[in-house]
Structures are given as C-alpha cells and as structure tokens.
Length: 248
Image 1 (cartoon, one colour):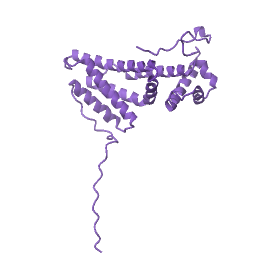
Image 2 (spheres, helix red, strand yellow; image 1 turned 90 degrees about the vertical axis):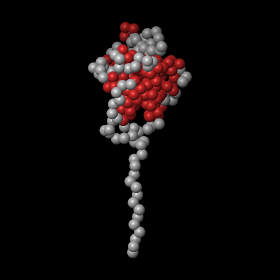
Image 3 (spheres, one colour; image 1 turned 135 degrees about the horizontal axis):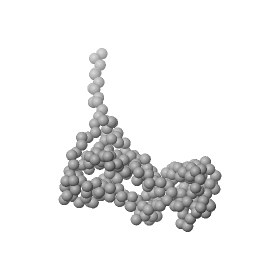
Image 4 (cartoon, one colour; image 1 turned 60 degrees about the vertical axis):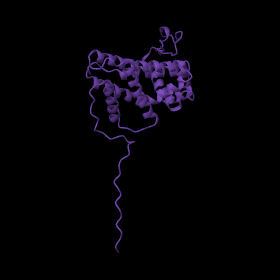
C-alpha cells in the first residue's frame, strides 16, 4: 500500500532537509503560511494546466513570489505535486468521515453519498490530474487504488454491522456488495462531472441512496420532490395552437 507521508521538517530548523524529505518546511509561522500559499497556488496551476505543462515559474507567478522562493520549500515540481496530493487525500479523509451520532442505516448511506458527491464535485479536476499522472507513475496509480479501497472498506464494515444487527441478509457477500455499490456511486460521479451533465444534487443523492437501500433490502426512502428536476431532462412544451384562418 502506498501512503503519501508528510515529510519531516528540517533537522533543528537549520534549513537542511532530512534524508528522503521532499519538502523544506521551516519551523516558523511565517514559513508555514508561505508554504501553504504555495500549495494553494500550485493546486490551481496543476488544475488549470495539468502536471506535464506546469512549471515552477507558473507556481511562483500564481503565488506572487520570486521563482527561488518555491525552491526554499520544495526540491522540484514533483515534490510540490506530492505535497498537493498529500493535502488532497487528508482533506478527503476528513470530508468522508461520518460521525457516530447518525444511527439510522439509510440516513448514514444518504450522508455518505452526499459527502462523496460533494467532495468529488469540489476536487474532480485535481483527481483527474492525479489519474493522468498515475498512468505513467505507479506510485500515484497505487495511491488512487488504496484510497478507493478505504472507501470500499468503510462500506463493507457498515454492511457487516447491519448483518450482525439482523438488518441485512447474511447471505449477501458484504465485500462484493460494498464494492459494487461504491463502484456505482464513483462511476456515476465520474460520468456526471466528465460529461458535464447538469442534475439536481439532491435528486442525485436521493436516487443513489434508494438504489443502495434497495440492494441491501433496507426500507426505500421516498424520492426527493423538492428542488429542480435534472436539467438534462427535457421540459415538455405546450402544444402549439393552430392558427385561425382569417375570414376577411
């Protein structure tokens, strides 16, 4: 399993990076703020230009700093990208975590779907860049595989818990069910955003939750009736009235 670990700060704050470190992270508050602003700028540039076409100078211009400032904190473009992806994975882990206060199984599924789709919408472009890099870099390809596996494992754990409670049929294979249902949500999210389809997010979340609940034999919630219907669904137009022929 590949894990992007946050590199350690320089030894003793001397400015010399540790062996294997990909970031030079001064221990001052100002240094941390500067590094954070560089990561924000780098993320925008990577999203706008993709990884291959991004240059360190592009990041410096976006951050409003001198070219050499970037090298004060990062060894090269690869190190900047690794730090950006590290921040992304940490943020996704936080966004996908559901508190224990939600006990109703269908509500937990609904909350999980909503959080996943919200995160996918927010981070879709950067995730697309990571996937592009992963086609040639096995580290990032494995990173995405591991991250998706954690998403599946959360679902599998939830299904097993419901089976122990007698809520879900124990004849259902929890791993296969969880893996298939997660693939459904992820696949829809990818197509939704890549094809730029316009749907009401509430209707999307409710529809996916109904499919989850139905597959697991849980009570199926009512379809959302509030909000606009999917914009891709054509709106019926009133039939044109025949023109009256003039009698004059």
